Length: 111
Image (cartoon, rainbow, N blue to C red; front, side, top):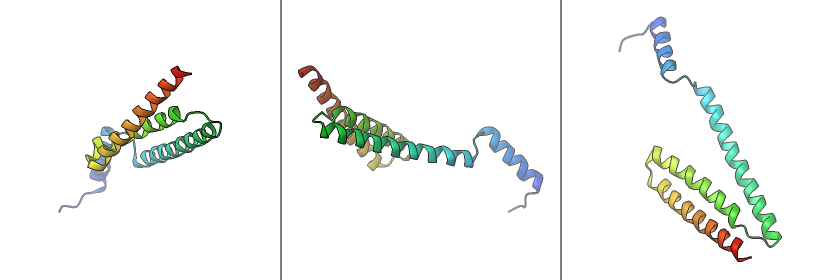
């Protein structure tokens, strides 16, 4: 294994940065922001479902939105990892979402 001098290290670092101009610190910041956004979206969705449920309203619309969000999230993970569990979660969330949105539409036109 050959030793690299300072200039070689700096040149390789610059080449890598030119290929992908987003540094690791920035990616970590983006990932943390995304995780926080998912958590807040989920808690707001749950709160809306609780309020609607308490008022005797349907929660199908909110549950459908949460389901499609998580189906999309699971599918994006599956495309990257190719893990079977991510594909299964994609199907489960998509089916729940579709069923809830259909139920919401039927309920909207029945009133």
